[in-house]
Image 1 (cartoon, rainbow, N blue to C red):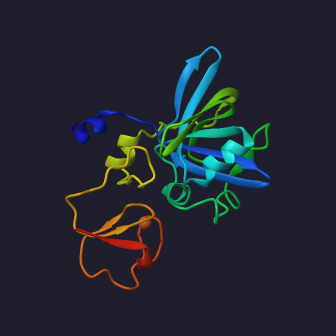
Image 2: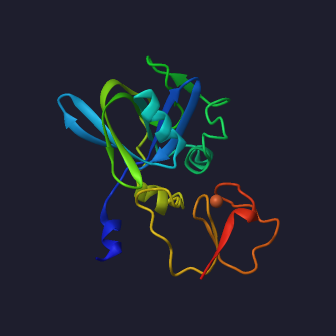
Image 3: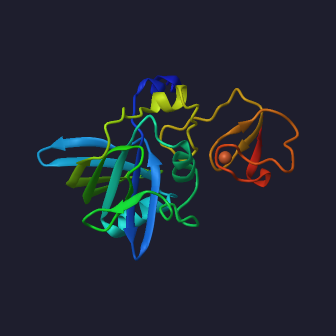
Amino acid sequence: MDQKSLFQLSYGLYIISTSAGGVDAGCVVNTLQQVTGSPPQLSVAVNKENYTGELIGRAGKFCATVLTQDVDMELVRVFGFQSSRDTDKFTGRDARRDEAGLPYLTGGMAARFRCDVSKTLDVGSHVMYVGEVREGEILSGGEVMTYAYYHQVKNGITPPKASSYQPAEEKKGWRCTVCGYVYEGDPLPGDFVCPVCGVPASKFERIA
Ligand code: FE
């Protein structure tokens, strides 16, 4: 199988969020899809190690917002590369709650949905949640951000826990174990801080 064939698939970029037991969680995904029209249902695949996925399982509902091209990349850094387990990602940002009490961001988001989980499918590294859309709202008229735009124009990278992640075998140096950023050089400076996700040098591993 040619692994590169998978790069021909196209995706959007989204933040999914939920709330259970008084704890809010949210993360960036590229795996949101509309799967049926009547009733409208969305599916999302979330890595099992991901705290947001764990809380969606508990809450039985999730919220999804569609990122626009002008979204603050700081939001992508925090929601994409930090864990809700130890970071409160919503406090201090432009956030609202939907009718089910789930938090969502409003800035840099084209639309938002709230779904009630109707089916859960274990697909190995990820769990796929299918949810019926209970709320849907346009938030801004901005151009939506595709995953290709994120990579090509925003210089975004794919974290190791994403379903579309592929290791960069050709690079040598040190790789961030949190976000996948590669420092091409040796040695890695002791005071190095990952420019993408902000973790220290101790979170890097040597590659090749
Ligand atoms: Fe990093």
